[in-house]
Image (cartoon, rainbow, N blue to C red; front, side, top):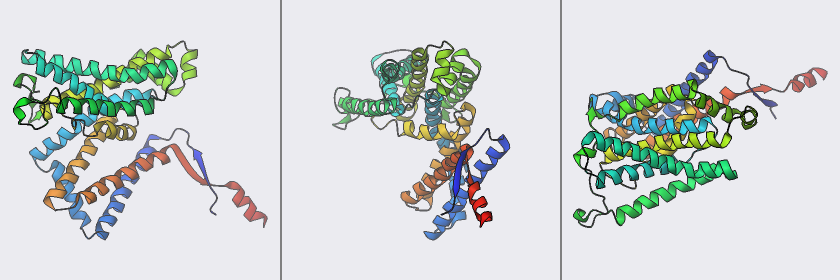
Length: 358
């Protein structure tokens, strides 16, 4: 048996951390290329086509951007909660409830476009925040498990929207098809540069979240509670208040994602609107190291990977399973690199001593 010892690292120098991450990406591409070759495809052609499919033309860049926007905003929401070590797995539900609130405004109010969009955004953020407030309250007051609580709320939100889609909100003009009425033009986000203005909102939010977490008192309190509740309590911080405020912000950002998707992409409310962004955001948030600026680049990279995978399915007739496998391999290696950033593997010293004694 090889005598290995896993030791937690001290603070790793930034250049070494970057080297580990680069090595993980290189290894992931090499391993994915090997698997692709074994399946009978040309790895170079596949990877080249993925890059072209995501960035090759203006339209493809726009499609990649469309995928990055909801992922980025949701990731920022998840980041706020994770920074406090509140494991918010409820992004999906918060997106859906935000979309529901925005849709309620769009379908029932007759307002000028600027006021309509503002009202939809506010309603979505409030509803998403309130949906996140439920597990936050029970966590703060009763110590419930937030992971299970937020996860279960996802299914409740999705089933609620499904009920609306097949029931009271079903469009009579849809000829029996389970569809909610399309929004009026006043409720549709305008485009900027060929993509809806959600990308501008996302970039602004990156800056705001970064400043909030790193340069405000409340952001500092969130970090302290995340590092040690006992330290925060000793410093006189109101733990319950910090938990509830951070989850209101987290859910509010996820709810805003729902509004943007309903307004600019679906142009209505549907049960498939969240598209697993709430779960994917958990991965991107961890990969970014809970840093708002890094989250931007990670989400863009992930969007490129997804868009490129979709492209090779169409252009090269590559099965969806192969495209998904490529994405999974790259994610596995990159996530695995986080282990080596936190720990190092060494040989037991006693093994060497024992050998010399013989």
